[in-house]
Image 1 (cartoon, rainbow, N blue to C red):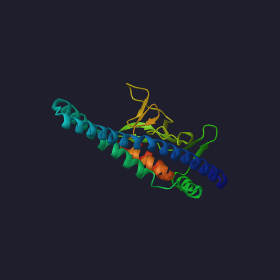
Image 2: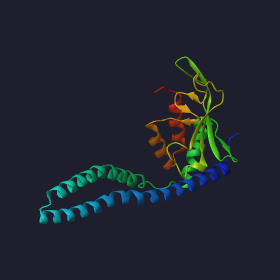
Image 3: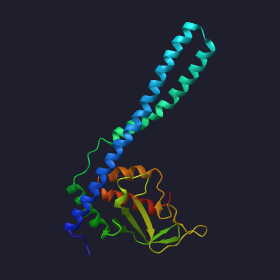
Image 4: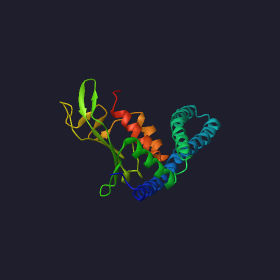
Length: 218
């Protein structure tokens, strides 16, 4: 049975609340990233002042050590700046409105035929058709979005890929698919695009991207 409009709106509002909590965490993380950029600059200023004294005192050995410290500090800066720029970019997007998320849920229900919501587990899920890859039958899977994990959104911990008719690897029962281990998706570079879709409220794209990861080999 399809989820009703009332149910979809309630789910959409729950997702939006989780995304708001995630945005608060993003700002908290931003403070640390800014510190990682500003601290080395303060350290370089201290080295500059020490070099002034070395030049005045003709302390060549000390000046050499300070130069090496400055070089090491500079090597660490580009990575810190890159992380900070990425954080700024991720904050450019607005938190989607409940109405927009609702429309995405409707689209997901239409495209996948069935969208299931487990109120007790607070999960949203769709199911795949039975999958066979290179003559290996893997069975069908449930792609599960764990709504309570959206506020943290670390790596892909908000997703579970559950084998409904498990055919695990002979050497490891936890591997039910080349991209799935212990029910977690090993999506590699695709994790970033899935997270971007989720933070923008594009729920249908989240499920579609995950489906793309489980129906093909790398």
